[in-house]
Image (cartoon, rainbow, N blue to C red; front, side, top):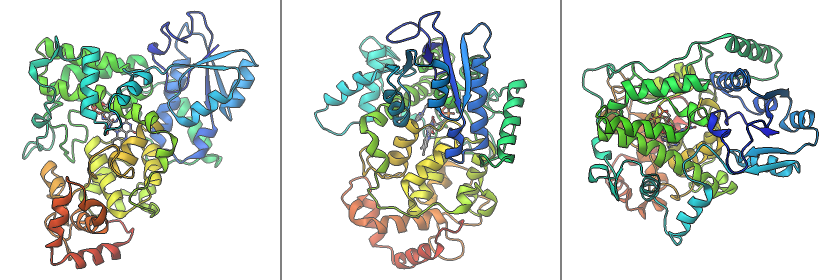
Length: 498
Ligand code: FAD
């Protein structure tokens, strides 16, 4: 018997290979209720995960035994009854501990990523203790997989086209005017899931945050492939230039919306990057967009996965800045209406309504606010995990603990990612209608991001003054005559919604 976790749903988890199931091996899936009791998930995320698992089990002609149980252990005991069970390496430390503790279970290598963990460990060792850099890793993956390569050289002689991909949004445009992203249509399985979740909530068994709307993300392989095709044909060409830009009325812009399908295992990252490369080779998309997309998947996604295992369990408890403040209630409730700052209000509403925003709102609006307020990085990580449709332990830890909250003291990034309101103003249309002014640090119209940025630098000046990438703004802050007022004002703000 072979056990498929709920994020191992695509055909690449069944192809023969090391420790894979044979063509006749019975398959087991366990829907464990305890998962939803442990945390207050976004309703759209709970819906997506259950819908995807149940759709997978209902695929015609398949050999899945689908068990609903309180815990994984109970589901396994009831179905396998001591018989040997195989499983692919799960995606969290907790799940790995569980399967390793079960004597009847044999754990095979992970699938759904480009590089085996042993390959990454060897690559990292080759660095002889020096800082690991995503850019070096990404080039190594491209060489190893022949991705966007012309022989030994990168396509068109360049590894990195990032500087073509940092455009602010087009002026005076409310949206990017690109083809609409793929959205699935709900079916009977979704109706059943919605009914079950309603009942659990009514019984007081679980509670959720966020709005329950029509399902927006693929739950089946067929839907995932449609989303990929639509993206490559209609949106990839414009992915690059505006990758970092934000528009209030167009939250998706040219982003692919493929993260949840990749993380559920519906799509294989290999097929995503190969299709993108083919689009470039056939003249259907420019290199900066294709390289940008390939970098996200073969670079960032892969790197984050590898670092999760490489840094180990203790990484979760990193707190280099000593941030301990709890998350305020309005934040936990996704109460966007309580917020006046237009950028945060808009982005929090996107999360409340869909369980998704693209990477810049996550990093430079949500994460930046949490960092400036000094919120406990473990609580921030847990919040992202629960509230995003694509959130899983492996992807949250490096992205939030490392990239967004700098809680690892710089193991993953070279500087804390936070900024004054000027950055949001340059990269979005969110500041125009806002009651705060990005240039103001104090008084009535002081932008909470601008004031929060200077107060953050001041609080951590000792640690940051030694960091080449932020030493300059730290020195600049020394010349701000109103810095004590800014800090006092920020202190007084407490955890009230800005
Ligand atoms: P696109 O912009 O179209 O990018 C293409 C793909 O690249 C994504 O689908 C995703 O699979 C991959 N990717 C790009 N960057 C990353 C990254 N840093 N880590 C992992 N994959 C990446 N991504 C998640 O999949 N799950 C998360 O829980 C998650 N949490 C994040 C939290 C923070 C604070 C930040 C800064 C980033 C986080 N990301 C996460 C990465 C990124 O924001 C999302 O993958 C992306 O916004 C998903 O939208 P998309 O599919 O349209 O991505």
